[in-house]
Image 1: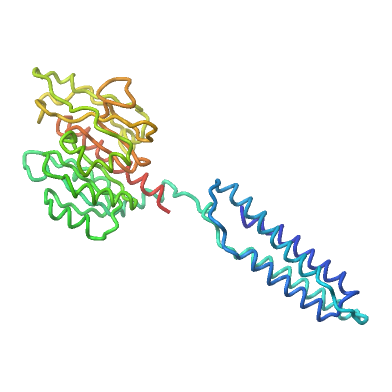
Image 2 (image 1 turned 120 degrees about the vertical axis):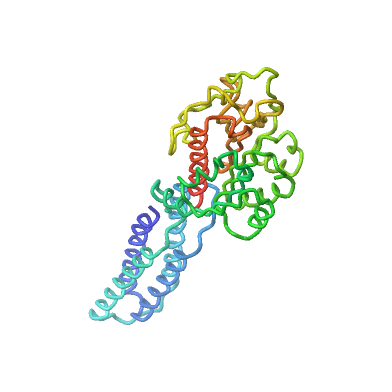
Length: 368
């Protein structure tokens, strides 16, 4: 859009140059006319190629305003050159007028070529297509910590999901030291997964460095159903940045009833429940639950003026509290505050696949 708007402006400038030169042919020497034309060309090209200021307005308005400014600057410079007093001339031969026409034509062509060669602005750069995003996901750098991998009785859901999604993933299983080393390695991670289902000590400095990576643009999936024990610690800055906070600890009832542990999708059309798999809401927990007594998770609420979204709640009709699955930072970060193994295996693996696809899609859509 910017390029097409500049070209008409430059053609107008070229016409002015030609007219000015032709008019001056009766009142200035040929050498002076050519020199004025060359000065106008140089100054016009300088005005056009000057770096643009970064505005606070929208891209379309930015391009229109910048084009207008560039055109006005170029016109002003051209008018300044030709408004200077000219030298008293001698009579100009017709052959010299023809030379002037040739020079003017070359000036117009050079100015047009300059406009055509201008690099595109950021506003012209298109967003990644779904095909681009899908290709990037297939080559994404993913770091995965999953403490359930240390218990042979349970299926590591995150690892199983990655086998379907793809990507270049570094799977450290339950090796906490390796996880910290990789977080600090300088590798540009597209996605970090911290699945702490056994409640091992992913706390303190781990959250400081994970927040740093998120601030650098990485996506994050955190299964953390012990939030009530660390929410006032080093995870607090990340929670604050996300616009969420702990609402309450989620405790199991003294008498177990699977229906009591169902959850509701706030928006059943959200891609987190539909891409690449359609996952229906969990109406109940497993009939043979892994952990369904005592502390079974945490409930999250969004803070005032927050852009965070609760995706799944424990209470029907709630959108801002009772959160069990929460998205923030434009969908790059997901907090799951319930235990994966308390719900049906196939559905949870499918949901984990969606988590990975959802966070990476949002990550790459905001990375050009």
